[in-house]
Length: 114
Length: 117
Image 1 (spheres, each protein chain N blue to C red):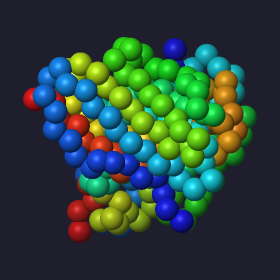
Image 2: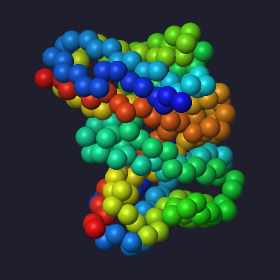
Image 3: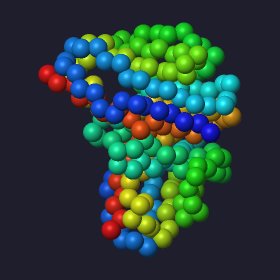
Image 4: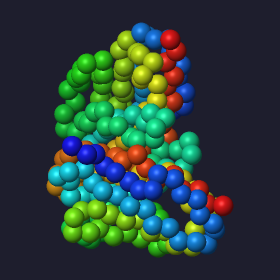
């Protein structure tokens, strides 16, 4: 049973560029959340998708946007990259939005902005 | 607003010692969920335990146990007979009840645990 997968593993971008990160949820999961983890910090919630709609959003600017596809996979897009966007981006999935199930995390994408 | 505080930043123990990781939380919700996650050097967060706010019974699962006390808003996690493989960063997290436990998680800053042979 495959867990949560993310691609790419590592990415280097230049300030001002745009980036797209991808996530495939664990089999049987329909809810996907994205988190940003700066070095030495705990993950910060970006947003959550269910039924192809953004259901919850954290305190992140509109430069951060997302999408969920009919197969439940998801993308995170970041426009006009800042140096401060350098972080580990984690995707998490869970079954049945609104239930009491925990979230399972992928290995993350390490984004470096130069 | 929700907040999770992990006052300990780094803990170092010798293998086979017991170690307790502290977590204090703040929330206005009456129903909420608490979690512990482990992050090894590979970076992937691994789910360890979950507790809901209306069940204060403390349990043991293998070498893991937890002490949930609503009166002090604490959710401490103990590893018994620590092993080198337990070396990782441990995060305590809180979620509100609005949409269940799989709503957004608020994490603490994490505790780096080093277990020496």
